[in-house]
Image (cartoon, rainbow, N blue to C red):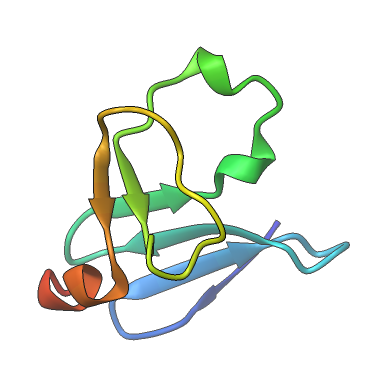
Length: 77
């Protein structure tokens, strides 16, 4: 994995081999986002929040939080 600073307060990580996005970390909010597609066994952990739901092809089942791009901007994430 390779990381780079994408802004003054955020860092992004991606796979050096294929270029896939791996993570996003925001220093100000202490937020760490890890892409769900990295995991084979999804039942081994709990989804807390689904981000950018207005841009996805589908939504995940469950009672977790769901944030749109506008929600993310309002929270400065």
